[in-house]
Image 1 (cartoon, rainbow, N blue to C red):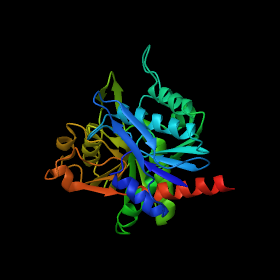
Image 2 (cartoon, helix red, strand yellow):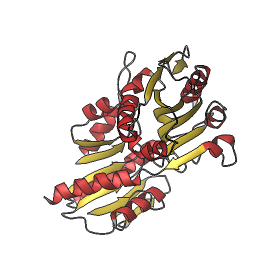
Image 3 (cartoon, rainbow, N blue to C red):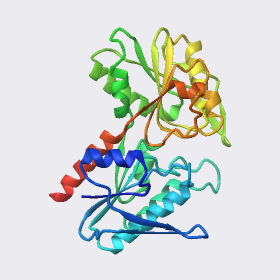
Length: 319
């Protein structure tokens, strides 16, 4: 097994390498005066099972498209130099939210990104909580491994007092399957009933509209509000307000990816939200450290989940 990180300073990559008991192999990433990059491995990858780690979120120093392009170029270079198999380890996959056409001539950027990965010889992708699992799997012709983020959050839920009534809630109809899956697995793990509800939310032309209708009983319960990501925070804030009005005792927001773009700091400061739990797929650099939202924030590592997946993949390659 050989590991490369497109961000050598990434705490996620360092922790993943440590969990796998593997070092990060060196690479050259030269930036020219006009902004172009040259990437090459500084060790021979010939015949190796190679894993390239890179989270494709924007910032703080590069855009999603810059990170995507650098990953594609590096994977192509590894294949050129004889790597037997190259796996893209992508905690956050950029452009995955646009996975279908909602109006004429819409781009389907998830499919375009898939075609780019395939064109450079990527054997497989390992991704944490894609926006729509079925759309993600259907977009790719190479092997994909989708990791569900609720496995990262199980420990947080399990640490709650045993007499606390719980309900898992989806903030919109699109996330119902994600929330139901966690509810079922959590009920089995905790050996007690876990409720379920959904918020009515609609979006048109990029503008969210909601009647703040809660479908399901949450009165007196601690609500685990599960979403794939938090961008501006408007969806989860509206959902939390609706849930509190419906009688929820408190609302804990869980999301695989915390992008926290403006005005997330203000939205998430709303007292309807008791706690915000995200994975470390995206560092929370956009949230002011001294703000109310940051004081509610808990970051849980997805590294063990990725390490387990990579071990399984590598063992299958060895066979």
